[in-house]
Length: 565
Image 1 (cartoon, rainbow, N blue to C red):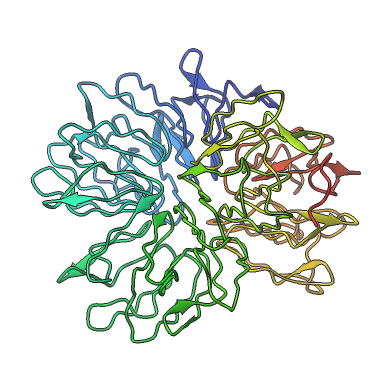
Image 2: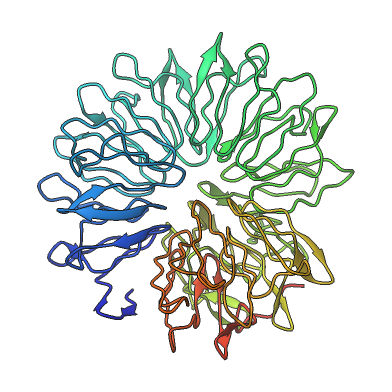
């Protein structure tokens, strides 16, 4: 894919979930998710977008872009790189104690060697990774090499069944004797034997707890300090922990409020793990971006990252949290796989499957009009045609989605059709040109009269006028437009400096904004190609939605697809 830009072109630039094939080893104005690129000389060297393949020359990264960072390179090296929720302090122009999404980097010699960004394949030399950086982890390497490191969306090739200093996103590694000890990475399957990881699976992990408590469990982007095998002062992305007696009390997982009774977490699940419930109910489970109100130890009207749960009797029954495996009984969710898990459908259709950050409204239990983040939809007869979801390979048969992979998941469908499938980012139902009940990842929607009211996207504060959203953009940002322009938009992990009330150099997760005169110009949302006309947003693709603008305004998202009812 390539998108025309002014003063240059994207040279085989790969957004999340793509494979990188560079010519001459340079990318030109490549946009990595959630970063603002300021290149010198106009080229990126061996830039890594999440879910790319890294081919480094000389073992160094040149203007490498990690998701959600602001790059200012000097002499071809990362300088003052900003990864989501971190401040970079560089020394001598090289990455020093760099924080990739929630991780601390301890490099040797000041250089990154075969660094791994989330969801990419590593090409190692001699079979070892050197100072690999996985988002949301604190790396403490011994000997300077990583062995069989697994970044989210990688394949694990272990030797003797053990991982050696493996770095998974969102975990704090403290290796002993060169092996991971009871490390829990979001979205991995943990089976510890003698204190070592065996057959560990990144994204979509299964948690096996002992005595009903989390044992040294690592939530995405947290530092774990356990005492007696229990979580103590655990830090989950965007949460404040108040622990009492060494247990989690009133823990806030990414964007959620936990109200526990007794002050203990029982079988708590952070995003991307498998829940082991007792009696068929979730017990004080913690899912990022949800508001938990537990009664008698059960979840009540819990909201998973950006999705609305329709419970029966006020309790969640085998609810789908991001990247967990559901085994439903009694006609609820049936083997639905959220990001980073395998879907095995029975009868050939997805049954009330909930992907992170979507609101699913199924009819007859089938998914239709599936929107995967970062995909271009070409619908024919109400079915998806050659849709590309981040980090997935599409094998279409007869022009329909077959074995489609939603964010980090494998779809095995029978009949080859998706019906009402909504992948992360939102469920769009437009009425008269307005978003209706749109779900942004990690937000709770309360709509009034068919319009968004007080919507909260991840990491943003919504300032609405009259309580309604008009021309809402990407998941994780709230748009309040004036006369068709973006106003006071807040994207996750960025501060907006507006001039005259319009977005100026705004950074939407996974987009590079080049504004002219205070307007959006050639804005790139995660995994989308932007074709602008007259310097305004035109047919912009925001994570998981296809925008068709009329007269320079966003209007009626999801063309050629009937609105969800």
